[in-house]
Image 1 (cartoon, helix red, strand yellow):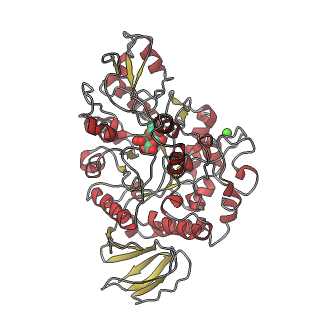
Image 2: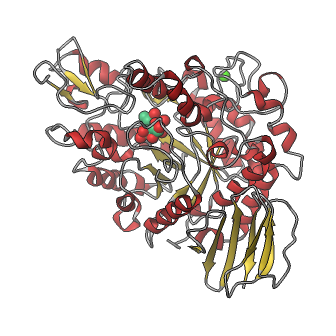
Image 3: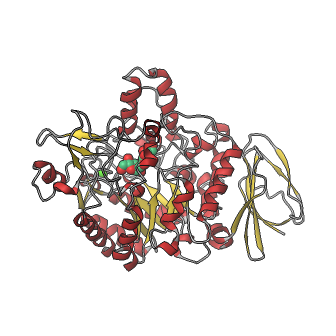
Length: 558
Ligand code: TEU
Ligand code: CA
């Protein structure tokens, strides 16, 4: 889609507030911490920030269980702090995207407390309550975090539905009152000056009428099944008509579970639903559909072919986000690069080049700009996340897999890898807090931290800064068509971005060896735009480039 909009041109940065910067010594990141670091992000060149849920929450799932949609999480600060965040961002010409978690609430939300109090409560049908089936759950739905998706409540003897943890009951979107309450809530935040909304698990709002059992062979594919509610597009379209279309707001959907070809339906601009699609085929390239904690091997051919497919689905009228990790995935560098000390910086720069040269809005997860890595988890006690604990319960405690096999996998796949505190400097607690950090700090913070990189022209940080500037300067890198030059190549990932008569070539060496790479016929170097190792060895009219291990570069070509 070449229709120009600010959110296609913006470079987004994801802040996980809990782990970004603590300013009051309680060991938990806060809104004032984000404000304190706005200038750091401005220096980097960031246009917009997506923050994970900032609402009041008992934090069973780190804020994805909201107990009050109109208040700030106590640990993060006050509404005044939030208003100041928006004001300070405005001053710097930056925009704020908030997380919208409306598939479910916390079980501590007043609606749910009311709802479970009696079958006659006016809030009863704000959620899904069903009778048991022969003393068992109403159907065979599993939950994302382990066990059944139904929880029995003793007060009335009925079960309620929860796709995620039992402390996250699913809202009943079929009830128009629920939808109106949620729309009002969105207006509340938009009226404050929020300019972006990221819709959590948006594809699961509509449920399948009657809740029939999943056929046995589809139980493992429950994530996809949960996106088959008949009214999903009717609801998102209605939300657009009633709320979103009245604001200058960028809307992104976490489109999880939907087959790639159908994801476009959420962001095809002719349909008036959302703007930006987050899809997960790339990040899950080395995962199984069931046993989601287990990793399998991946190769560059699969990787680039997946990117190609994702690019294609956006088509002429849709738009994607491009990201290599977020708070639900391990560190991009450990996942797709090489986090061993000798290749860490080079591969971090290679991945940066990829993120900032796709035909999609780039989302940089906090710490990527420093080359932060996975945490060296050893034992189950090291983990915090409800998801990994649920998996442990379902797979290890039941004896299906050994603790060793499980740990070997989750230390690479766990969401906790990306949730350790930000590494600001080499001092105590990495400069994240003067108190006791809520979660372990990666011991490599003495080598990997912001303070040592901001003033080093060759740092990962400064390479990101230059790349972001390059993306801003060259609209072809945002809007140009994408073409992979050699989809089967297992070493060198090369592609062009073309708009009108302008053509740019991006080359990334995914191997830790030097490769002499010949440009495809008809292409020759016009000039070097940026190279990750600052060598600028390529000259005008060259048709061959010597690529050092993990070398990456952008070239104008003829
Ligand atoms: O994730 C939704 C989701 O579909 C999960 O399966 C997620 O992809 C999985 O945890 C990956 O391992 C969203 C949020 O991003 C996540 O942090 C929340 O836990 C979840 O919704 C519930 O709100
Ligand atoms: Ca704090």
